[in-house]
Every structure is written in C-alpha cells, then in structure tokens.
Amino acid sequence: MNKRRKSKGEVAVVVVCAVVGFLVAIQLKSVKLNTAVDDTSASRLETLQSLYNEALDKNEGLEQQLAQAQQELAAYREQAAAGDETGEALKTEIEHLQVAAGMTDVTGPGVTVVMEDSSQTNVTGDEADYLIHDSDIMSVINELRSAGAEAVSLNGERIMATSEIRCTGAVVTVNGRRYAAPYVIFAIGDPTTLYNALTMRNGVVDVLGQWGISVKVTTSDQLLITKYNGTIDYQYAQILPPESQEEVMG
Image (cartoon, rainbow, N blue to C red; front, side):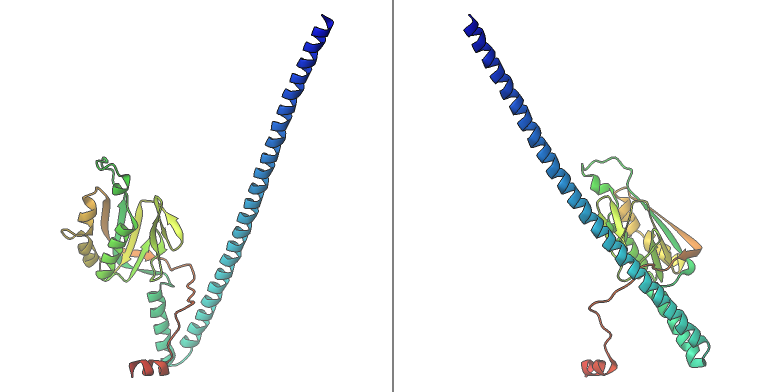
C-alpha cells in the first residue's frame, strides 16, 4: 500500500516538474522573441531617426541656398537701379524673369476655381470614379494656361514648370506637399477669357460635371498668388554658350 502511494506520489512530482519545465521553456522563448522584436523596433527607430535628421539637414541647406540667391538678386537689382538706362533695362528684365519663373508674388485679375469630390450616389461600385484625380486638376490648369493664364496656384502652391501634380492615395501632392479636396486654383489673366475657356459647352467643367464633381468658377478683379518657396536644383540641364549655339545652328 505504501509502495503504491509512493509510486503515485513520484509520478505526480514528475508530472508537475514536466509541466513547470514546459511553462519555463515557453516563457524563455517568449522573452527571446520579445527581445528580438524590441531590437528590431529599436533598429528601425534609429534608422528612421537618421533619415529624419538627414532630411532636416538637407532642407536647412536648401533654405540657406534660397536665402543666398535672394540676397544676390537683391544686390543685382540695386546695382541695376543705380546705373544708367542699360541698368534700368536690366532691372526690368530681371523683374520679368522673376515673374515668369514664379519667384515673386504677383497680383492681378483672374478667376478662382474650386473643385470638390462628387456627392452623387455611387452607382458604378468604384469610389474612385467620384473622386478628383490629378488628371482632372491638370485638365483645368492646362485649359487655363491655354487661355493665357500668366500665373497659377493650387491650394496656395505656385505652379511652376517643374511642379508635379500627382495622386498619392486619397490626396494630391504638389511641390512635395500633400493636399486633400477641396482644391482651390487661382489663375491670373483676362477674367472673361479664362472663365469662358473653362465653362464652354463640352469643356472641362461639363465633362467633370457628368460625374457629379463640383467645379465652381468665379471671376475676380484682384487675386494674389504668392511666390514659389522651394528651390530648383538643375543637375543635368546646362546653359549653352553662345559659341556652341552657333555651332548647333550652323
């Protein structure tokens, strides 16, 4: 009887030890996995922090370049203003180039265009059919430019020759910044011509209206379009010297 009880007790102890050993093994494995996850997270955080710091340094460098260029331009303008008629002509040319390049604030008459996503009931099953896309915005801007718009902005961003307008998810990126609808376009030019170009029959407003996308166009006697605040860094395009131009033309 005692031997049987002793045998059962030993079996119970063995079972308990096995269970405890199993639980300890699981706990150690969990600790190792958590440690590995923590190490991975820490490594990723360190990488992201490094990339963030690099982006900040690059942005500060570009801002310094822009400030220096603006100072140099101001100095050239002062020199031109203090000179003779040739200096005045140079000053005028610089001002015209600044306007064309989008590097200065401009004001004048034009139109305001407000674009909003469709509020119609979705009958196609594809929600994207009722949202404004980059191609829709480009259609409006191209129409304005064809009608003689001299300066254009989108949600406050000056549209340059190098400006990108592209969909990034449910928003649109322009000049590296992301914006959601509504999209507000300012265009300086002859108000009547610009308005008629957009609202003509079967024009861009009519086409977008077929999908319920709202495009409101209003004329204005005075609009303000601010300058482009970024920097343009040409790495491949170079100015062709006059002697090389003669060779190309010859």
